[in-house]
Image 1 (tube, rainbow, N blue to C red):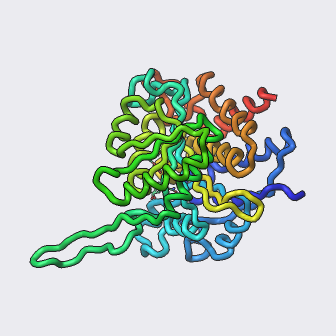
Image 2 (image 1 turned 90 degrees about the vertical axis):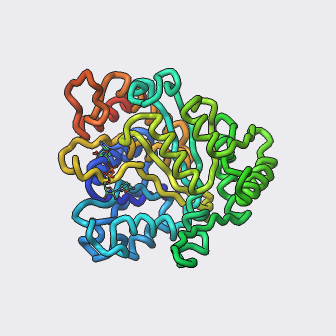
Image 3 (image 1 turned 90 degrees about the horizontal axis):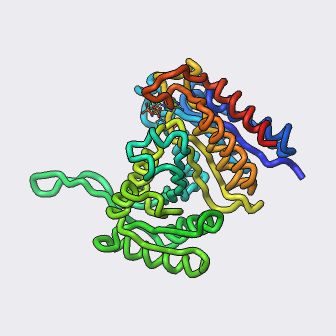
Length: 367
Ligand code: NAD
């Protein structure tokens, strides 16, 4: 049988720097765990624009549709700020999400004990936190019609429409329940069924999908209360499933519980392919960080944790994903820090490659 395939799109700014460290980890799995991947690399974002005049070449798009998983670094940078909207680096990313129909966005908020002081919340509220937000990514108010700004009488009116079909809700809900089955078997669905019809339908459909997962405990919460509970007692949650708009806000809120942007991975999943694996793209939450690009200062952990998600959700290698996460936890507990993780006590930060060295050493030590 051929090896599982990965398309790597390092992108711009710190994207290639952090991705270099992930490639070392991928190679480690091939050499030390008999888990080899067929890896190809291509351009996206500003890098693709420089080479081809478009932020994603059609050939790259076709490759992304064929592989088992796409790993993306980051796109964008000041050099491209004045480009026409249609060729801006972000359009490459949006095209991938749209054409691969990646409807389920997974944003974990996990707090490593060693970094609990970085949270804006008290240490005991966030230490050991491990929750997953599933955000519906391809529908809802960001896409619904009618939309626009119209004239009405002597003033203008801004219009957006929250619109969800049952099947759109169902597939997002199903991906949340499937995740919960691999975790602590709890799903909390968030909407505003008290004031929105789309929320009433959301609650009905999620409840119905829940009947297929009797082992999973399902609860419902109004999204405003959900925001409050996330900062009051986040550890009460396991998997949260919510729509595109609420998910956008709640996942950023949950992300900040854990401290640095350089630590946050994400996955965007679509429908299962013929081989049973979901269409999938994994990427750190952070951008291309032009302020530190090219200086070896970037934290590669968000990108590495994104690869850990790929191991778990695309390649069914949960134990190997946990091995990588534990190696990262260990180096942090031992005090390894890139610049973004330096506390007020100071010290000498590790470079991107030195952090990679430390994590590879911890992986070796795990054998
Ligand atoms: P950013 O995430 O790139 O950076 C925000 C701040 O966090 C910066 O100070 C940066 O140095 C720091 N930071 C981010 N990642 C880090 C890491 N791994 N290690 C250490 N420090 C890190 O967001 P921004 O500055 O608003 O945007 C910069 C560019 O990135 C823009 O062109 C923007 O459009 C693009 N962007 C791309 C994505 C993406 O590719 N998914 C996401 C957000 C922003």
